[in-house]
Length: 86
Image (cartoon, rainbow, N blue to C red; front, side, top):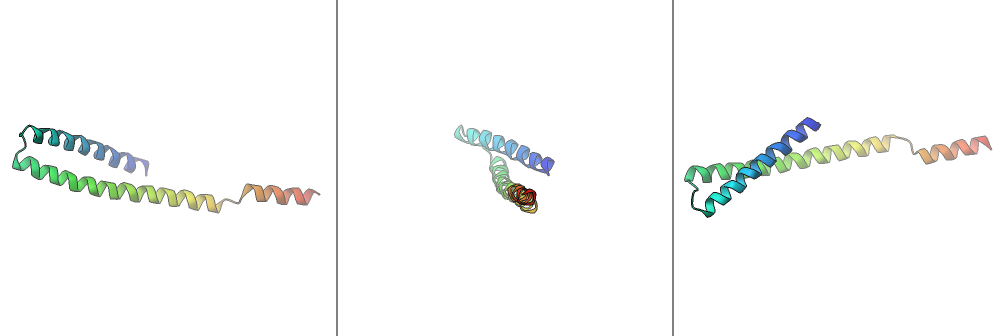
């Protein structure tokens, strides 16, 4: 799961850098129609990446919560043990 997360984050970072360069080129009038189409494609992919990253984060949080809930509360176990020894 970590490698998938890192891969998506790396792709997002790379696309953001390309978008920044394209915006800079646009300021100086160096953006062609092909560049604009590529910009739009990257923008759409960035939106998809955000959805995927959010889904991974939600799944990881749910997994952690499930693990937390499946472990018995240590405080309760200690209290029970204390009562048994009295």
